Amino acid sequence: MEITAATKYVRMSPFKARDLARVLRGLPVPEALRVVRFSERKAARQLEKTLKSAIANAENNAKASADELYVREAVIEQGPVLKRFWPRSRGMVSPVLKRTSHVRVTLTDEKPKKIRRKK
Image 1 (cartoon, rainbow, N blue to C red):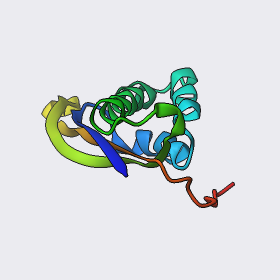
Image 2 (image 1 turned 135 degrees about the vertical axis):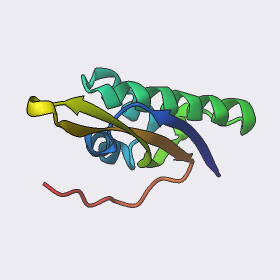
Image 3 (image 1 turned 180 degrees about the vertical axis):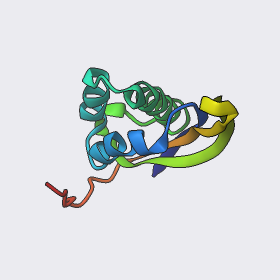
C-alpha cells in the first residue's frame, strides 16, 4: 500500500531542498518527523507539512497507523521559474531566476531494503 501527498508551487529552490529530502528516504515516519522538526532549513518546514498531509491521508483514507509506515520516497521536483530583472550599473540589467518546487512524499507499510548512503 502506498500513500502519496504533494505540495506544488513552493517558493524555494529545489537544489537547496533535495539534500534534506534524501535523508528522509527509508526512515520510519516518527523518525522522519523528528528529523524535519529539528532541522533549521526552510525546506524542512515544507517537507514537514507534506509529510503530515501524507500521514493524514494514510490514517483517514487507508486506515493505517502512522507508527507502522515508512517514507518510501521524498522528492523535490523543479517547478516553474519566475523571471525577474535587477538593475545594475551603467543602465544595465541582470536576470534573477526565482525558482519554485513541487514536493512529493510517498509512504508505504513495507519495510525498505537497506539504503546505501554516500558519506
